[in-house]
Image (cartoon, rainbow, N blue to C red; front, side):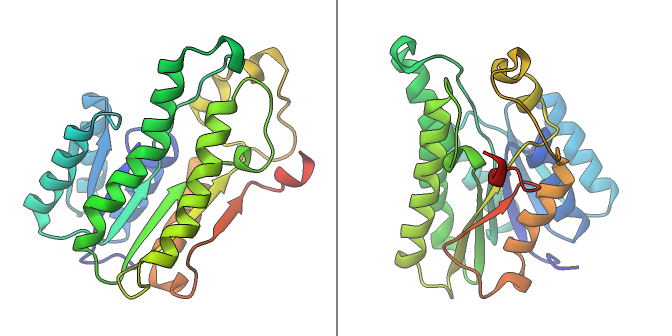
Length: 242
């Protein structure tokens, strides 16, 4: 088991890619701190991980609230005294043209998608030795569509952040990489008004959360020991079509 005796924090762990990743980490031996906003879904993913014989806790957290971010990491350390893996998956989108966008909505996207990663790195890295951080970006960081500019901007900035941080942090302490999914069968995809209206057409393969979890867990594992500061596009070839 690749993550036996490891401790992982996973944001967005109550649904979609985050949940699939938390479950795979648990299946492979990790103790998992599942970070999310819905208590019932959090309890369910913890129960699923525990049923496989691994340890898990749910920490209800609003990633836009710095106090709650600090508390989530502190609760993880209180439970297991270490952090080996950080998966930053949680993300939010807006669907308004920039000239009509409420600045508060811009700020929330940046807080959840980008600032939370920055703060979690600050909070977790001092406890890591031979650790791994994987942030979940999007093909929107490379090619995007109208009316999702805050999301695309946050993901582009995330990839730049990861490249820069990989130069600041010794690889012996932690590697930091990005997975950029394309279309994945999650509520975020099908609830997108652009998809519903046909403004954004989904062509080619639609991935599953397990497909992306496999890529994330590979980058977080010792098998990827020579991979650092880069983005793995896991999109079924979608980016080539955009």
